[in-house]
Image 1 (cartoon, rainbow, N blue to C red):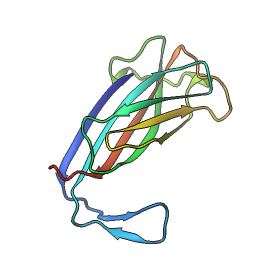
Image 2: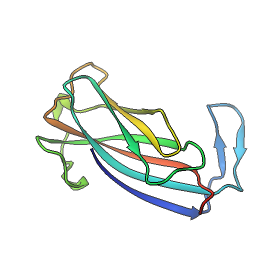
Image 3: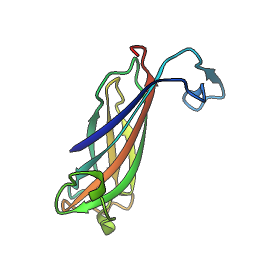
Image 4: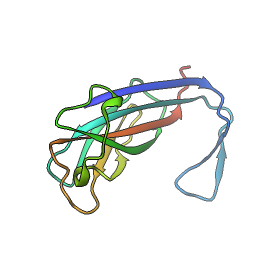
Length: 139
């Protein structure tokens, strides 16, 4: 797994409202401190329709953050040394969906899958990007 990350901290959010669990109530979070962290990773295909890996953050939030995951392209044969080497979509062997689970204060699990049950070839390295936002009082 290649993991690269960036962080932004100690800033005032332009939107301080937060909706939890798709409820109809909005919480105003004007007093908490917020920290963002983002990066990208890649996972070698496993010759199966789904695969996962754990992303470990470089610090711990005060409580579990909200992750956002997006599918990237692929690189054939060997892992990418940096994000500029993610240069194609490897046909039917590319992951087409991403998700997350098991969110903790310093990690979460990324899932990459194909909805048509086509295997993700072990000759493909599938990239994804991620972003987390959460509270971090130690700023």
